[in-house]
Image (tube, rainbow, N blue to C red; front, side, top):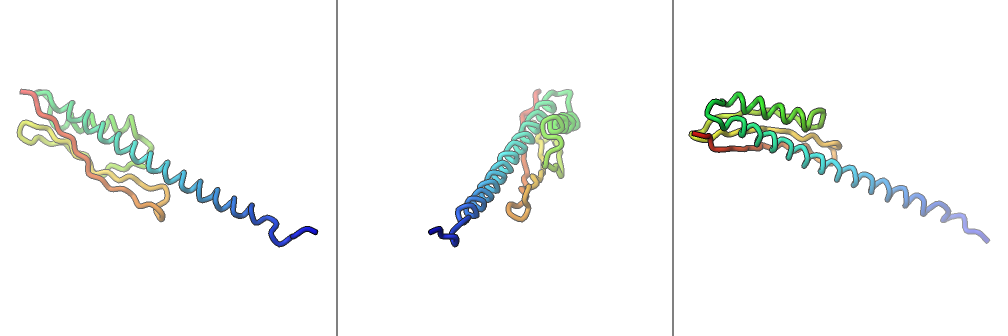
Length: 124
């Protein structure tokens, strides 16, 4: 005699568990993309301050180089740069960027808002 009341119960559990596993996978992938984008902005700021270090260079050279690097590394991504600036601070050049890393699922994971800085001593 067959018991029909429990038929298909394992399938529903499997579908729910698979759905949660895929959601977790996407959230981890979002975290990894955010870490990559943060690293891209940090590298861009480092390149920017390197471009602003020579005596003949100014803060505009720093900004242009940093924007070029961000555009080449992280263009078309969920990265939004609210402000990117470079300034002289005594014998140093300081690059600052306020960025927003957008979440793929804003209801589950909030956007990241970061302020990143890089600096280098000027030649001379």
